Image (cartoon, rainbow, N blue to C red; front, side, top):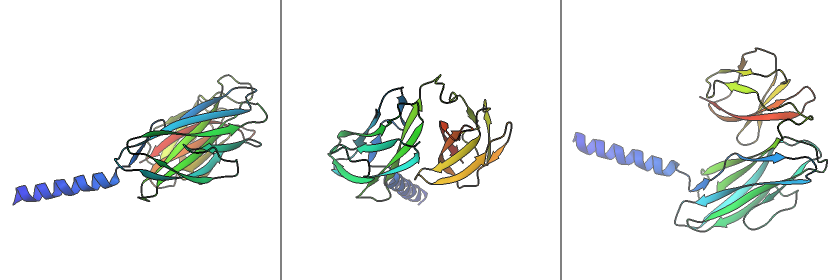
Length: 223
């Protein structure tokens, strides 16, 4: 009887694990690019792989987290590159195939910028199968426009509180959930211990200088 019960529980566990597993894999996440001076557009791309033997119907939604004016973005999925105003679309991936998705950051000023935009991918055949792709545009290290992105966050993961090191240039802290909502805003002070009153999970932290410019982002894990 014990052996039968053990076998049943094992199969039940494996069944839950199978249900929780995503049908697609995002190859590079976050997808990073660098903003070099005088470049009017910067394209950052990643790949999505279909892990199943069925055609996947995927929906994407753009969530803008950090985007300095007058910068705008365009989404490119495997079928089309869309106008800047379009924030949602759909595409299909063949069984076991890999396709490319990307975001084009349009930067008319040509100045070094930091931007963070999420593309949230939803499996239309299983609406609980959702993954965000983080597209992060980073400044070139050493630019005169922004502080260098050398702030250290610890501990990571954290439970309730965290601190920042080498953070003299940080004036404000913005924290975003994975669906693009800003869930916290904090004024930064040297040596301070910060508290995030949010549920456990993954978050994106954006660090601002005293002019309100984001110069570094960090993915953090609250347990």
